[in-house]
Image 1 (tube, rainbow, N blue to C red):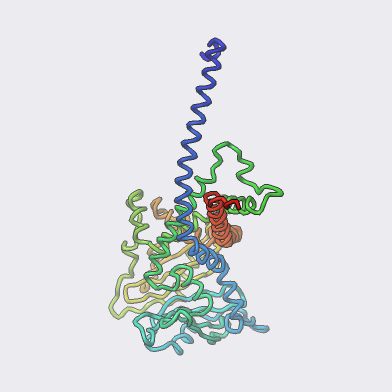
Image 2 (cartoon, helix red, strand yellow; image 1 turned 90 degrees about the horizontal axis):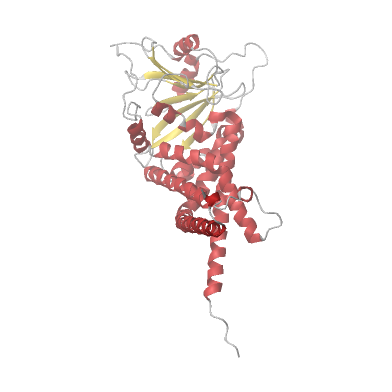
Length: 420
């Protein structure tokens, strides 16, 4: 035992232990310098994109509220002062839509009114004038009268400058306005930025155990030290949320590659090419209609509020109806989607936090709620908003830190002025 050694040997043992600790610390510092270089170059090459993606992502956290505020003249209605305040049946809403829908329009999805003074929003697509791409358009319908209150182009097929404001923000966020190529680029950038966050945590980790210093801003510090501490603390405090948002961004932009990776760990997980539920085709069969489909879901799964209503696209497709704020589901994610046979009304599939599925599918189903912040209600949305705002802070403080170091190196290697 060390305690039984003579004093001279004990002193020698302490010296050896100290040398070992110093040697280990030097190795860790050397490795950290390597990770610092990786972190630096990832920040310099992908950091500017992080600013765009982060700020547009913060806007998108509240896009529904913002969109409605910007378009109050067509997206808000007055409740009836007398008589029934019930919404008109979906048969009447659909009849109003069909009356004004262009002949070549491809039918889409209804967004149910968010509250008593909002409208139905119908999403559909039409061919562009000078391009094979499709334009995404909206119709707004008063739920109390079934009258069209207005229309707009959400995504233009011809020019990004013709998108509506929220459409422009969406395209800038997930594709940098570069169509399909941009979607892939943003997915790769999200992956690189995720690596940047991980390397930043490695560089931040206090090797000397000074944890209080690692989590705080130094008081009365110089401008250089304040900039360093701001970069460090804003990075570490937002790393968990920003990391989750970037990971889900990789999934949303590169779904096939992401699914393939998940299936390596969870082989039974359903991928993008997996068969979807289909209606049993009946020749000359008549679809039951949205009103009856909604009544069936109401009977089987009451609770929550309607969110989206999707009609079948063809003779074998299904009704897909989604309700949110379902209290009996997870308090962090309360959404349920039900698929029904369009002819019989039979429920073919239910997707919700309480439905049985593989671990991989559960992981994938959580990606969009985490990305949007909706998985944790208002708390989650605010955290995602703040993580997006932190992106320009991280980029600017990182750039300043890099320029400070460059300036310092130049001063060290510059020759001394000659004496006269």
